[in-house]
Length: 73
Image (tube, rainbow, N blue to C red; front, side):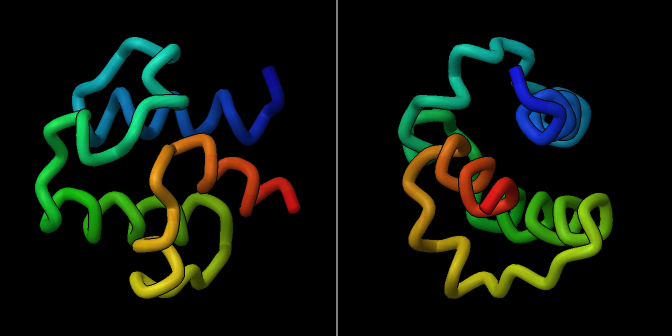
């Protein structure tokens, strides 16, 4: 597990209440996360990683793993 994956997993658990790390490969729409929660989570990720991923870019991530790959790239 990469450090980015661990940090995202920790943020997902803290801010979205999802503790099952295997769900990082699940489709985001299947996780029951509202669009408002997704936007707020993106703000947290941007603060944590010092990035500025736009919501339009994040909308293209179908899995949390896609976000991790983007951050690692």
